[in-house]
Image (cartoon, rainbow, N blue to C red; front, side):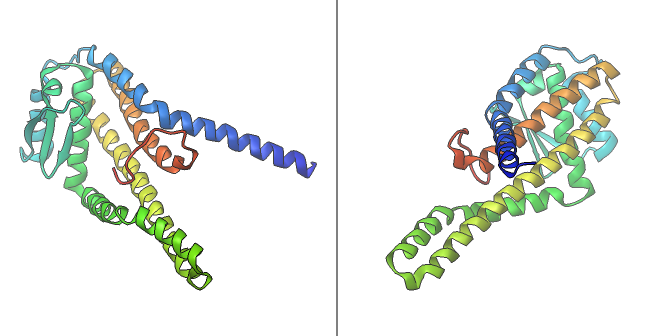
Length: 237
């Protein structure tokens, strides 16, 4: 095959992948919120409310050690240190969205019970946030050192190399987060199977997949920030 043709095919393949990743980066969150609205309109046929469902999981799998705290932020449902943070809308809606969210966060609780994945991730994120403050200053310093004196060239390259390492750490953390979210969703499906029929579990599984896609979107927004074609996001969010 002609070498020029190979180059053209490679460039076209790269552009196609770039467009695909940009689409995920820019539209995955909108897809998730659309999915949330639909799931919030479907009633869970579980013969119990969301808090009763939480209590069932709490007693069965955690010996009642998990507590619930109400938060105002609708999108802020989370788990941390044996505490489940749920919005009033999640607690008050007997929808598949609420059951899926509670199941997913209890999946994180199960991760916390079984090992230290969450603690390691949180530690890396704290380190990343500290290092993130030095990213822009290091970049500016590196450029200045490379321009003002040839004898300082290697120092400038060292500063830019530090920037690259910080960026790689950010990508690594986001990949770890995606893996942890995937495992939590797997646990969530196991929880949901205890109270819902198969067809409703399937809907919840699709909803959780859409939620995980938003984490991939965050990864691609960081990876493709150089294109200036993605929405802004924090490096260590």
